[in-house]
Length: 114
Image (cartoon, rainbow, N blue to C red; front, side, top):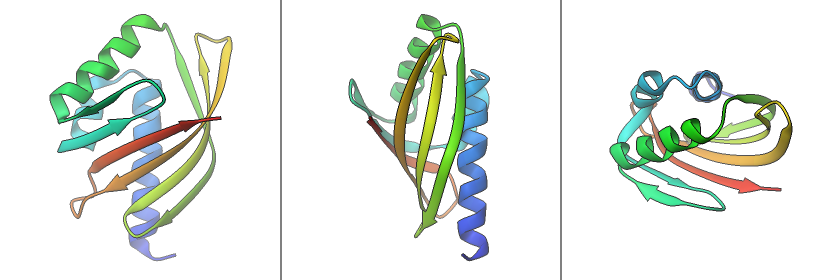
């Protein structure tokens, strides 16, 4: 893997860490202005709209612990198999497909539960 693949893997891990810490300002810095977010419940685009969705998730849940299990990086995209422990009791398994732009900011997050 080239250094770009390592860089976007690292950026992905930083995103997971910032999400786990509920650090909205750091998340905003990770995102491109035209970010697109889709999971099994919502679909949203634009940085302000995506931030609002994430803030709502944070308000409704006291804690998140994201454990990356497997990361594959290629062509400015990371596929990440993760486990998320919500409120220290609900474990969900997710695959995130996270795309980065040329500035290494997240431009798309598509999450699949299961």
